[in-house]
Length: 154
Ligand code: 4NP
Image 1 (tube, protein in one colour):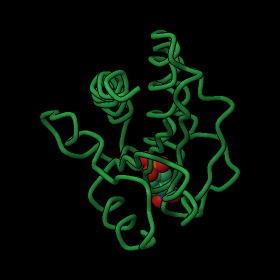
Image 2: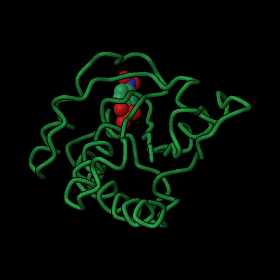
Image 3: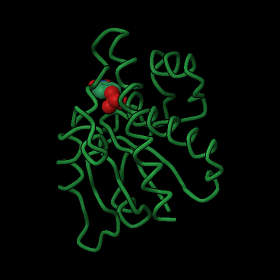
């Protein structure tokens, strides 16, 4: 099974989701059964490491995002992945707009799919440190939902 997380820049929210979910897969012994990746709808940070604040906040909770590099979502991703999970409505609308007719991937909002209190992961880029903690809190909770779904599908 292949899961792709998508945000705007691919330097804050979706790399966090990739790192957190991969960590949970590893803990569950499922890392080799599920492929995880992340991408941005925008191209400003292609090839760049994740945001310093994102990496630091993640590291403090035991997630190493140091190897991740930004990339932009492409039409091929709709064939390569089973599930594409957007961090906010704007990302989801962008994905729907570029979805090819023969797409294999199912598109959804990450938090809404697992019925969290919020539907969207707020963009932390222009805010303070709290925003990065909130991103982690929401993504950790939704990743538990995703892990349960994956276990049911494998
Ligand atoms: P992300 O956050 O979508 O969670 O990676 C952002 C990163 C960069 C920008 C916006 C959001 N930016 O405008 O450069």
